[in-house]
Length: 268
Image 1: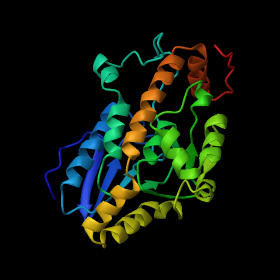
Image 2: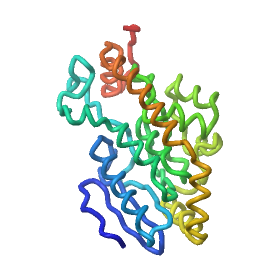
Image 3: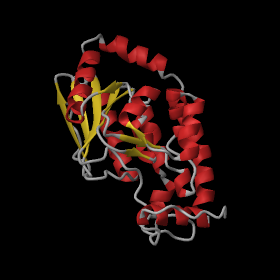
């Protein structure tokens, strides 16, 4: 195995041509720019390692990734950004890091054993295939936060399940169970919850058995232009998100989520 950096929030291991990238921020595995940067660094190393022909993206804890942690709303400034966010964080936005994940050359299987919510759903859409279970939950809950979809979901979710189904998820912020997601085509394999990671590794191993150059080039053809489409989408998504972050509705949405109540939006 090529030398892999020591990461704070992920674990990486290669066994029999299959790498596992495990998010290690249990129980919710909230993401930020640091986590996405680490996954991007790991994928770059794996792309250059002939001992890796496929990768599994998985997570510890009860959730796959519950999205961004907005707290109770008290942590947000007037612009809707977290007060703890540094100028560097704002300049090097996590969506810039997210493009690196879509540029990876290694086939990726997502082991979605629990909730993939908001930006966590965006992360779940990076892999080529998703393995899930009935207990998992998939939700693009942005409008429930008074917000706009991000992480390139306006491209990736639409391409995976069609414009109408994606619009339904975006407009309603509805949560879909794993079996419902599988029926929509959002997930490719449905197994028992305790079998999700094993099934993802088995699928990755099946891919890894094939000629690596053939797989890599076929994947490049199938995903041609995806990173560019995601980059264009995130540029637009971020502009709208930045505007909506400053609204009262966004702070109400965050507060309502924290307090587990129905939000009272005013359209302002």
